[in-house]
Image (cartoon, rainbow, N blue to C red):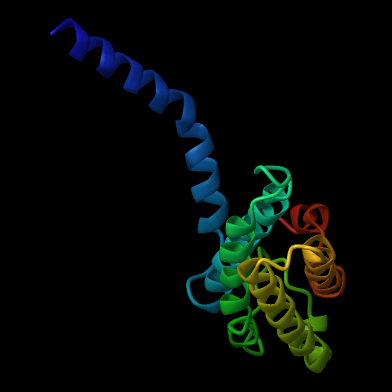
Length: 165
């Protein structure tokens, strides 16, 4: 009986400790309207997590990196990248979104960067899957540079978003 009470006490403390973090994350996401704006936020968050996994994978494993993580994460990015243009229908703006109007005024460039991301992520995944590890870091860096190029042109910096509250 005592072990159950201790377990419940530990669980309660854990919930109290992490509740503010969970509420803040839910509150931030709750500011976005349902539909394409919320959907693209989720897709970009997922791609960011996959990109972080790729970055982290370069510093683990017996060879100095973990190719299986790189392969899976790059494949996930490639498979989701083709969805990006569809999640930015004209007029899908919101004050809490970081999407810049430049997306719609420079649509062809935006679509080209999404396609470039898809192709580069597929190339990275294929290289990792086939054991061609010689140029993995270079391929990953190109993919990350494409993400950055798109963000630099088409996404508000975090500080600008906060000013618009």
